[in-house]
Length: 242
Image (cartoon, rainbow, N blue to C red; front, side, top):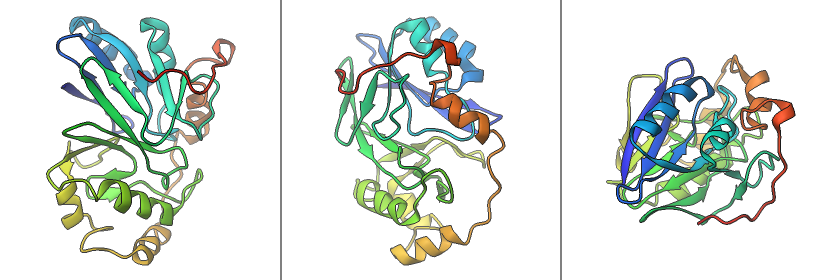
């Protein structure tokens, strides 16, 4: 599986373009609206066939370009089923498989940051969205957040993976690009040294964070997949995931 890690400076968001070298079928995870031109140009230069645009959750800090990518490439838009956004083609759930060429991503439902959070597990890496960050984790103080659920998701779905598995998060604010499961188990200040559930909840509930600057426009924008209201479309749950 080939991969490009792409960055949006304004929101410190990582997007991931993945593809199968033989078939040229491709997937993009967490695309950013302001980077639409860059991403479409790269997809064209690499001669890829974009088949999926996937979200790790309904974001509060940027608007997705998934709707525009669908218009350009005819790809499927996938979000977790709890999002229930009418613009999506497929509502994803735990253990769904996203296939592109000879590769696949397994959906891991990881609520806590929001109740729409999912991670995508490949054979040799995992894309952790806001669920698990490098030396951190997604905030749990708004938008259906729940610190106890976040702890359960991280310890029950991610920390059970082999220590050598690389993690690729949706954001980083300190210039880091990736980590591993083992590193986060050892060095994540919120989770290291077998942190208890109660201890994690206490840490998360004691945080005093500002509201994301773009939240009031980002959340409704992402509920429309980044397309204007008059371009919305209604789709059915349960569409093919192959």
